[in-house]
Length: 462
Image (cartoon, rainbow, N blue to C red; front, top):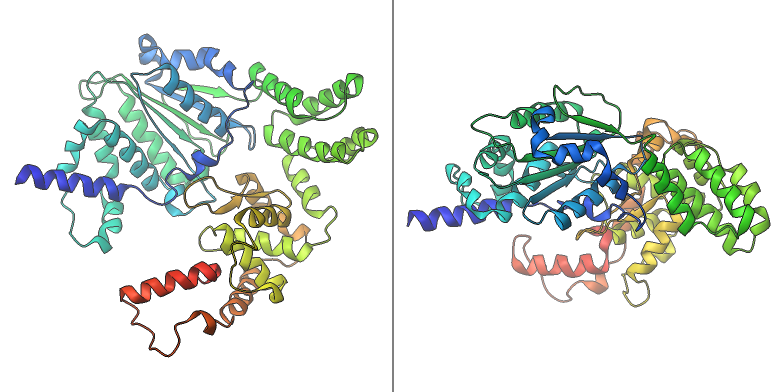
């Protein structure tokens, strides 16, 4: 009975550890271009980190730092895939913080839940660490109980039981979580890395973050992305395969200018290539050099240029940005689609007909409204977020949204969003409600089915 009870408890806790968006950021990060990132595998810092004979010099900690938009997340995703491919016996777990996601996606609580979920499923014998906890049977309070568990202690207990097995952990975008939480995390990881009789020396952690906030470490390897010859070559390789700029001397001159101006920021290069490729596809080969000269250096100036140039549908643009910035949770594509229409085109509000307006149509609409600065995530929940945290930094932290229109502060934006909600909830639902019968009580299965049917036709009500 006790063994069966423990087994059931373990399964319940394992299920509870998972949450919506648990791998959303990792799934959405661009997979490395076929000719990029391979240089990392040959870097002395990376090789030393994996070398068991050099563990005492770094205690299993590698920290990759770089500017916003320099490609840190793509490099870390490449490293995850590379270790899984080339180190078959190693257990690989990861977490990519996501400041644009829901609370658990940007907190260390969510990180511990994700890492534990992966580790305990990969090595089932470690699940015995869960036996010390007793959870109430009430499923409604299950998630809140998990939040209060000493997840850090659970993780440490699992590490102690690794034995000779090798565990490699990747944690991306530390700067997208709360600074105090990250400081506690770094101290904890340093403690785990100290070689003792309790903790094995086959636990490795690779972190990535921006340069700020600066957090000192006592022992570990630090690698700065800017100035790495391989990283510069990655940008050149990307330009060589993706840039459309004709042939010969013009192509080489444009490529060279982009390289010189990029300052190691891969996102700036990607956006510039997109702009120039549009010009090329419109037959404006002769104007490419001039258009490149018009593009400003640096991400912030480029974001401003993208958002303020040729602004024929400014209302859709502003409302799209306001919803992504100020919604209480990330919106699904269909929610955002009707949220924008509620404030810009009331006549288009109608029950969603999947045959007339497809999910692909909505994605194109959102891409157009955001001028390419927002995307639908590739995770199961498929919410809409900015293509990079630096977009949000520009709009809010650097007041970039007021470049579009003055006085777009949080209060006024929330009032605008309230008006959109009021417009949408006043849609006539009578044709979609059951006729000649009482509406079911809210806590019944009939009411749940009715809400599901209504939400499918009116997604923004969900």
